Amino acid sequence: MLGKMEKEIIEEHNKELGEPTKQSKAMIAHNQSLIESLEKMKNVNERRLATLKVKDTPYTLTSKKPKRVKHTTGKHRVHGRKLPLHPLLNVLRVLLKLLLHRTSEVLRDLELIPNPSDPLLICSNYVL
Image (cartoon, rainbow, N blue to C red; front, side, top):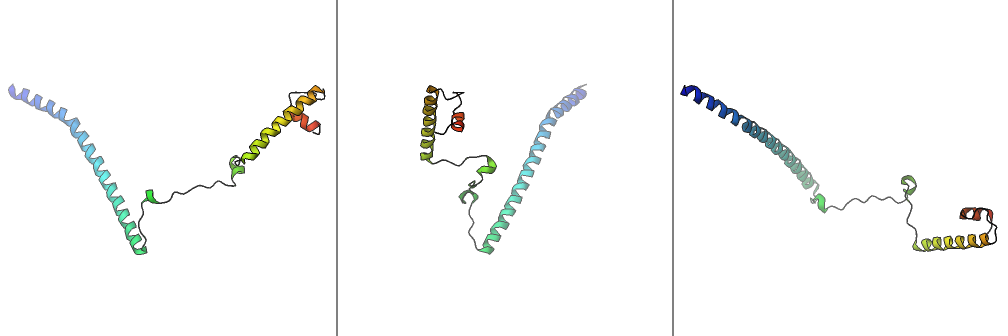
């Protein structure tokens, strides 16, 4: 009777230990694969250093190398970007809008504009 109870307790204890054992084995396998990949990276780096020694060029870290700058000059037509305007052009644009607005007010007062809300109509129909 005691032997049977001991056997059941031992089997139950083994079942409880089975899951952590599986998890531990999985962790060991994962760590082993990480170690292998790091060793491969180390071998690649050693080959690169050997190549650089043969070429007699100093090794510089990627973080120390100058960054590549993407030049987009002249590509504004393709990508839909506008070139930056000169500050004076912005002032001229504001002054032109003001002039168009005042001209439309004068023409509205003279009742020469059929649709007073359309300033582009003013420019196309009348010479300023």
